[in-house]
Amino acid sequence: MTRNILAPLTLGLVLLFLIGPFIIIVAASFSAGETLAFPPQGFSFKWIAKVFTVESFRQSFGTSLFLAIGGTLAALILGIPAAYAMSRYRLPGAETVRFMVSLPIVVPGIVVGLALLRYFVIPAGVPILLALFLAHTALILPYAVRVVSASLANLRSDMEEAAVILGASRIGAFVRVVLPNIRGGILAAFILGFVTSFNQVPVSLFLSGPGVRTLPIDMLGYMEIVFDPSIAALSSLLAFLSIGIVLLAERFLGFSRYV
Image (cartoon, rainbow, N blue to C red; front, top):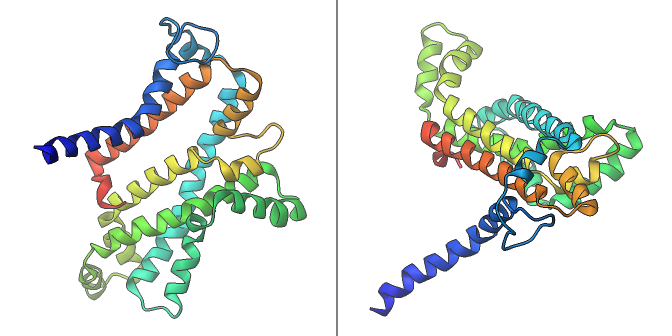
């Protein structure tokens, strides 16, 4: 009897710990009060509406969208050939390369951001937007390589060999046989990279500058000046956007098979 009660109780506490902060933020975003507080003071949609009127939010959203889409595409352009080479050929030092590619995940983002700022951006005079683009591409690259590699591992190599025997070139076989059969993994890698880049904070914090800030960094700066529920409203919208993207990916791509 005790075991039957303990298991669901433990599960409920874990879910409360994980979902509790999200519920608080969502509730606070519908507050009618003038300051961010919980429990909310009344009910209103005014802070949801205000999010769309703040000019800095619109600009930083555009920057984050550009970095998320552009950085993910660049990471896939680099990561797909790398994953293919490591999956199909016995390359010398392949494990070392695999480890090096994984470093942006292993190393804390604050360290990566500080190192890029001190030893790359400042000495070379790299523009802020270009520095952010390169940094986000580097951060997404490990996810692209890992997800595409998992998709390639489930693809029979003899399909490609059959295409070559029938007269296709290696590049033709890759384009006509391999890519169509791993498109689910590529789309999963794109979605994972997009969400990771869009919500990136530590590296963006070091590399953002005057006039060029990502949305999470702009939200941090906004909270230093204003403490109204609009930040909770924007956080809720972003959370629902991320959840919606992941749910759609799971529904149509089987997202959990690749990550």
